[in-house]
Length: 418
Image (tube, rainbow, N blue to C red; front, side, top):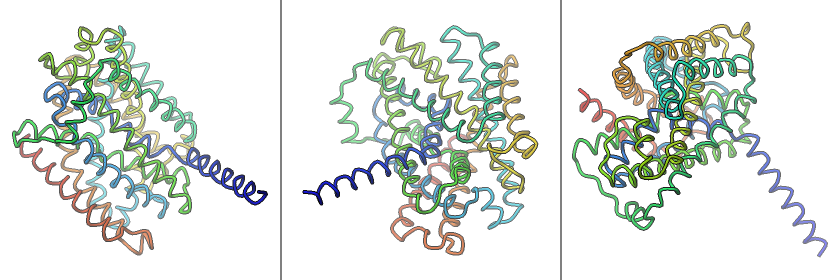
């Protein structure tokens, strides 16, 4: 009996230690996956539900698997090498390639930042606040937090923001869907070769596997100082984050399918989706949807510029990191401030061609993504770089197939856009 009690006490202590370590090390995976559900992402999910109902909802499962695999490789490289993705690309492939990648990512992410400010403006207008008030305040708050905070404090804020994605799950419960019909769509997936459906599946994948999230994830794993023996917790963080992000995406599609699609309501933006919900699900559902849009946009306003500044500063060999003071990393904070200022300023400008800006950013994003995936796979399989932590044969086969499929989908999207 004494031995049993000793074993039980030891096991319980080990369990609590494991759980505690996970909560200490969690953050980069959950944040990078969920912040990809930004203004553009919410708009894409809303359109998928409003235009096709639940027909394409099955695609969220393979997309989630692709997200887990790709982000796991980025996190693993960060832990093993202690360097960011841009830094590794510069060392392995040279400064010229890295420079072109930085230019492409800067303009792509600048378009994303503008879209996030548009999301704040749209969501707050639904809640009764003019963009002349909401945009400057949100820009200042996000800038102030990054410049004056530490990585730990900022991570806690981002994780708290991720909790508010639950508003979309609540809206999904409010609309009272037919869960039997929902399950049927997963068990018997359907996809025609119609251009509109193919384009939407590509859009769902593109908004989930965003290049900037990979740079942010690897940089923050490095800044967090995760050790190799602790990596299993970071891997779990990536898996949990990916699952949560796709659950949120599922409920956004579900809400719009059960209300807008069933009633033949056409929308073009997430704001229109929020407003259109009111007659069918009530004003509280509208407010929750709009609140979710504002929350997601605010998180992305901070994270997308951070991802970009990590990429640029690592690529050029400059000091980078939230834990550094402004005088220690002036280029890092300078680029961050520039992107916040430009994003807010452009949205404040009247008659700005926002749709065109978002369109161009997605085109560039589609061009950049295949190159980033190839870089990751070449780096992760470099034994000099990764030692014993390279991909295994089965993982490599699945990873390359996933990459080829993503490249094929991206090319299809570009062809359709052209």
